[in-house]
Length: 296
Image (cartoon, rainbow, N blue to C red):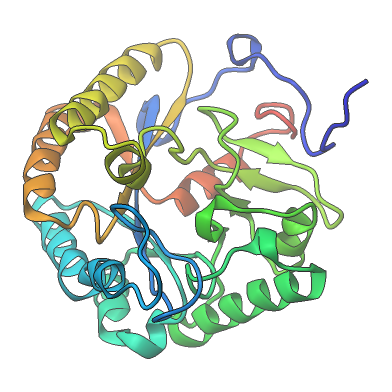
């Protein structure tokens, strides 16, 4: 037998109990906006070309564009279309540009834990370092928002063998680090179950447009195709479609222009879909009878 994680059991999506989201809708959509802060001259960081030696001013400034310009552009975009966001934040942003985080919080967007900074990743930490990272990030959100976050996405979507146990210990009710399904799934931890809410690891703006160099027009065509196919399939079963954004990627004007076409296409079907926060998806799944969702 191969080594396994022991966190969930196999479940075929076509053989599960059926349910519908609020209002009888069958497709839930969440728009998750990553806003990140990086150390200057050290640590990890995304780059759009051949990595430069430190200090990589080109790459640092490109990422900081997301906080200075891109996030604000995407906030105005959300207001124009009355879209709810989940804001996945590095908590160092509370020190660097607190007014940016506050602007999203003021409009009711969900604040999701995304570590302290994307200059580090959990896979490089020992148990105590990771525990400190999770608990410090959680405490920072609780201090500034007046409540603890419900959800977590690790920087670089990076976990250790202990991450799920530590997240549950810290009070998290869901995470988005495992791309295993198009429906929510309950995971086992040492401290009780934690929900996996779908998050795009494939159609992800940073991975597609920066890492894989997918042409922008093709990427947005793929988003529309993803929506159309999932909307069709949702007649058979409930599905979750995540739309993943990074402020320094999608916040570029020409990319936002293309993304506008995606949202305007989805808006034509808004009466058929539930556009919401991942935390609301989590709360709804928690309300379902035992045995409805895998792992329950």
